Length: 156
Image (tube, rainbow, N blue to C red; front, side, top):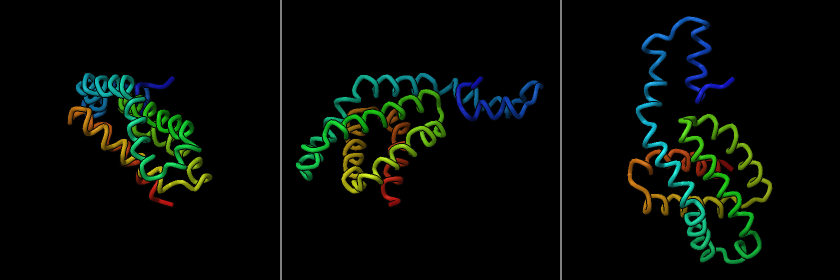
């Protein structure tokens, strides 16, 4: 059975049947203290994710209209899935979940289609939309995940 996130799983496994000390309880304390902010970011991504993706793709369409005409629905689906995993990873406070469950899949898909530059632009547009529409604290939680995504897109 999994705990809330990777850090907590590791602390519990390392304890090996004994009580956790204060240092080992820190991931749980950190999780609890930041929960309301993470929940707020999660809820805002759920509520506004579609609008943010559409904004990013409309802006991309100004540069690559043929790409959006041909692949718009697939781009929207992929970006929506990325946002869904970002939201879940933020709620769980588990970056490893995003890396293992999303980035490998996204990298494989985009590498096969050879659209990394265009997709990078779309995710930069998405990052701008989030920065303009979310409070700074929520943006601060979301940005590292988008930075990971952009870094993955730039690595090829």
